[in-house]
Image 1 (cartoon, rainbow, N blue to C red):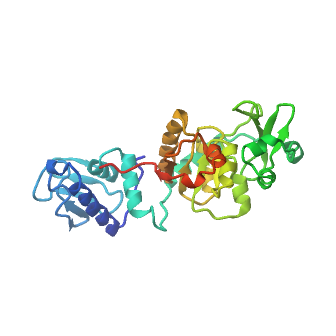
Image 2: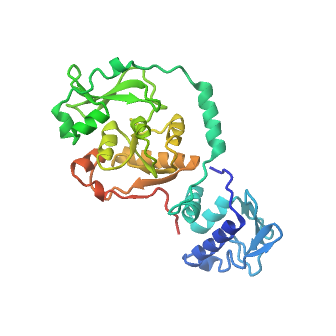
Image 3: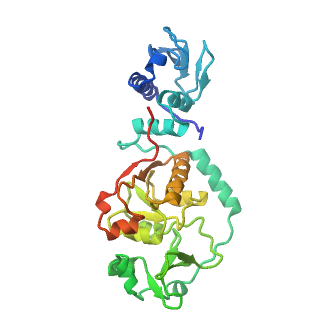
Length: 333
């Protein structure tokens, strides 16, 4: 992480006062009763009592201007703003970033700034590695569309959604066919979902690293989103749509760097992670949340207080109203 954070003077002061309140209400205050007390502006810094060693007169200062580095002139403790926050709240710097986000971005109309340097670097790297993409013709890509199999209804799909997502049935492979379009609307490949086994099959040799299933249909609708939900499969995307959730699928459990520019097309920084409720899904959620946070997204995850495996099971049980998303990183005390 360790990217520059830019706070105004009033925001920095508010953060310091909030951290002092956090410390006062923690069970660690006996370690250092005066930590972050006696806040006073001195020149280009805010001075306060050191959070690392006990003192009665302030000898620790933080720069008012970015990057807000801090240093104790008595014990020589120092670091960046995230290290100061993490020392007070406990936990890692990722928890510190969440704490700052909660103060200034979450629950307000202010959107968190992207880590533009990281994004620019990744975009340039992706551009240099870009290879020519292979597309299917509309005729080839939609040759199964409109062929309905009862299994579609078994998954809770409606005729309207079957038509919208251009679904079909391939009798040779006995599978439901999902045309996978990129954000420009080109059909990159066909994904098949077996109706006899619980597995998906992609066309051979496809590169899905820069494709999010369902993104094209959201962009085509022209709807401005406040948030987007990330799921694992095309089936989950459709299940979310049927319950009023705009969703895109990784078609797996890994968020590639190439997918970040695709998410940016939605012009929202708020992401809900709704991956499967199993060990692999939970581990993937953790890694994806950290990556999205590193790029500047506000991230929440499904708390899975309901006992279902994935979004499609929730849809079939008509329990989507029971789904709750919680902050991916809780500030620790």
